[in-house]
Length: 331
Image 1 (cartoon, rainbow, N blue to C red):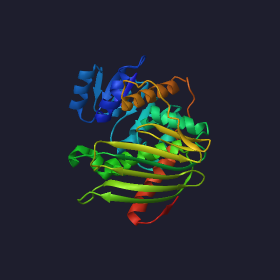
Image 2 (image 1 turned 60 degrees about the vertical axis):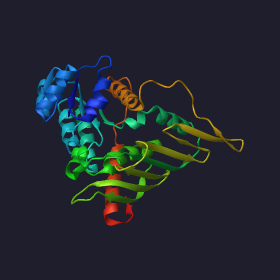
Image 3 (image 1 turned 180 degrees about the vertical axis):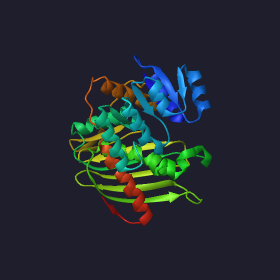
Image 4 (image 1 turned 30 degrees about the vertical axis):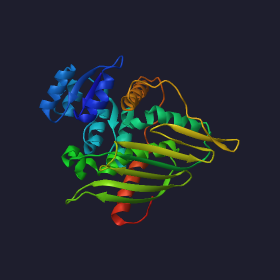
């Protein structure tokens, strides 16, 4: 029995289409501060109950799992409330707006012995999984560098909604697009400790405007250097997401998937081939993520708490500090 907290776009576009098709899963309640929106979505989707407060959902919804899809600044409080009520929690990224907040949520999951998972769906992409397989097998050699980025075009600032307000989002494009790409780069690179961060962020016009583009360079203690670039104002053929890894014996990239290895002194294309799925990569990644999370909830797989998210948010904090102070920041 699943309860959804937050009736916005990510709930409607990413989670609900997947949950409707999963066996043994029923969305029984939805909650949103906008009661009319919650009731309308419940009516269209055949969800039995709609609430305007998470405490009501937790008291009356009798849910086993809660998925938190509210604005960023509410994630910490909502996740802790759901865990305290005995629900397993899948929370949209980030878990919290500060490293200390992430630690508080992790401690709550440990205290109440519930499964906590953060929705980093890019990890579950088929192309990312293929690249990780090559890395895990040592086929690309020791990693020296990872480049990643995400560019989108947003014509109207009002389309951003709460994401354009720092108090609610925690930042702009770097938080929105950079955080998941940083997570992906750190995860695929082995979660090495980050030692130094240098960043530059560009801000839209207007008092208090959040960043709408920027770049960050991370130097790791015993892992690859990482460079991430983001933009909300990309002008091009379409949305652009990339991840490129460079190793001593080969290289790989996604969007599209390409893998090269050095064989007998010559670069050889060893990109896996196979039947393409009819399901788009976005939906497929969320479906795989939900399957993984539910297997953990049912005790079918053993998963580690997402403690790597403490370093991730600490790195985000260092990125914003580096950009504000125009200097390198040591962690």
